[in-house]
Length: 417
Length: 112
Image (cartoon, rainbow over all chains, first blue to last red; front, side, top):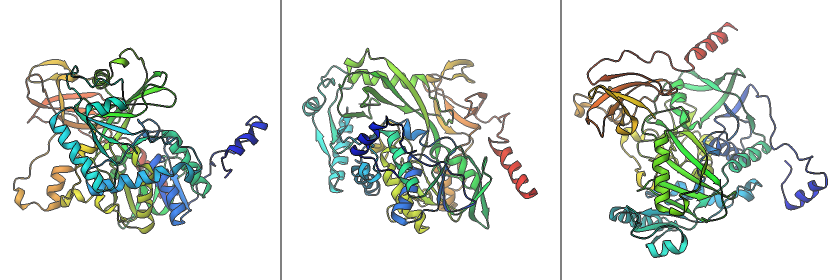
């Protein structure tokens, strides 16, 4: 792999940037791999990367139906934070946060991780009690957090309406300074390039249509375009399609797939240098480096695989944003996008062994998977390498819905659940 | 946005008046105490999540506030039918996307 550097940029400038190496190979799949990962989004690519880097397993294929990072990975609102309530999930998301902090250097790819801080607003007394509880829990777990009053919020985001005027006035907020945003498609490309450099085969346009299961153990996959590919272990990281994949393998997951929407405005001059989220009035917003306002809407209430959402959901979100930021009322929206998210009853992911031996699932991230990308990959790689759930993955077994040990993160998971 | 026919009000109303209440036709176990943890967990948390035909319970939340069922395609979003609780659906999920492809691929493989 050609290493990216400032000097390299100068060198290539001499040849008019026409001789850059391709970012990854486009190999023909082998017949057999140690590990096959189904799904080439951020989590799948991160899993492949950490398997190769940390566990020295390089005979890996990542099979992707479309193109790498072409789904939810590259279309989300890019928010990264780790202020989750319960110990299990706080540990997992903070693990991801620590990996984010060194990710650009680790991957030799600028993922534009910007720790600009995340505000979670409270509009009712109960909101404020929940916020205090969560911030205290975070601090006990070594995660940074503060409770702010409206005056302090005003200092951070001067043009937000912190007065008594709105229908739901802002009463305070939690503030995680280490939270922020990252460039979503750079994350997918960075992991893909680094995994490829370690020998991982990234196979695009290769849809998996069935698992090959013998005596209760998975031995490979059938693909639409490249026939059968056998594998010692299979990791399925297919987000919104996980239920469909589980059905192929003959079991059920406690997931429901919903459309979730995001939208961006026309690019405007820098105006918002932090991330603002509100569970109560239901909207979240940040500004990208390009200048467009990135706005997240809620999920549609019904199950759907249509990759489009309802307009009234957008309307409600934009109403909330304009209530918070009257100054944005005349900004025009540019693009809207709907992705399919796999929501879990307790708003926590599933990183788990399954009833089928050698088949593992990493799913159920619902509306908030992006922030966990490196952590999810790291933990799932450890699980795949060991053939059993790693220490951090254990609480996130799919069997927690049988024994009742749920991890209720509906509060911290925030807006869209 | 869906335009939904409420079988109780007997008229079409916009989706915003309704609320999706999840999968339809889930019978509560007759004797919950006799359920194993697995059975009870499945009753509480495990739902059908098909890419295709799905039977759903909806409530006309800001209308008559009554529940009814919808058979809907989760891929095309087409509403196939609306029927009252207690009635039987006319459409049922027979084959899901990919099912035919799957069996034909299997047949292909066993032939070679």
